[in-house]
Length: 457
Image (cartoon, rainbow, N blue to C red):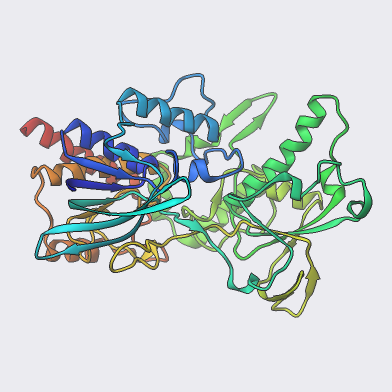
């Protein structure tokens, strides 16, 4: 089979790309490796909450309902995506193919087409299929799979992550009161970012549910010893500040074009000083801060972890793992401890293994308009430019690439791509595709291009 466009992935980016492909009568196919839509939102076992307010995470033509909370959780996000899919009739069986894992993609110069090889899983039977497409859209997600540490290969205890987690491993159904379960378990949480925050929020909610139902609290933190392995410091900010006198004010008010520009322009030392004062005075957090500005991977919109450390309910370990033997973990500072359970919250791999050549690290992708890379002909990377308003960036990228397919925008030459990359290379420690401080201007610029094309055609 031959298509004009093959979209790989049916998460946020794949959904919105298919919407614009359908709207413009493009002959397209979507290949999604999982059995349903949603990407990382569906994979995560915890009821994760959006790190940004909902108005930064909604499609331009389909706002989130007013009754949704300002920071929707996983269930609201999946419901919103399902409603969007239904409204635009995107779940067409002849277009979207679930349980279809792409294993290889290569561009055949002589045919001017992409050859896509994928495996269909059906009743434990795998069938290999090959299709061809003029254009390829990579929407498989910036975060591709759980990051696994080589140092843990010899660990023989219970190794968990956000996708295979079950509460029974932490506290058995008998409440941990019988037999060997009377002994306290030792749990090591690897990582202190958003994934770790989701895990600890989940544990806290387990306690709160018990209290609300007038049942005896699980008292989790007295039944398990929890250490948290910290590799890098994070900015922890709460979603709301204030008190009963002045009310509660959303911290999202600081995320506007003007203040983001100020954050970009001021020197790093001044940024650190301001954030140190704000952290202590506003967020009541006196822990170490990163010696850098805000990035997509160093900001956590929650004070859950600092509060638990402040109350001595979890113990921070600032070290790295050297090796493990059985259930003993050896750290590089020569300390070692026995852990019955390890919760891996070290984040996700950022690779694209099925592409030829393989993308070993998404942070190294340098693309024209953060979409097109010179190594991959007729290919668009949608959703690979992290920012505060990630969804809106993905949406405008999808529109732009569809216009390229339609011939309304000229495909950039290698020289165009090289010029764009050189002009936009960051002068500090930021990755090329990190749009933390550029997304507002980027969206405005891309919207102007799209608007001009709509008026022209």
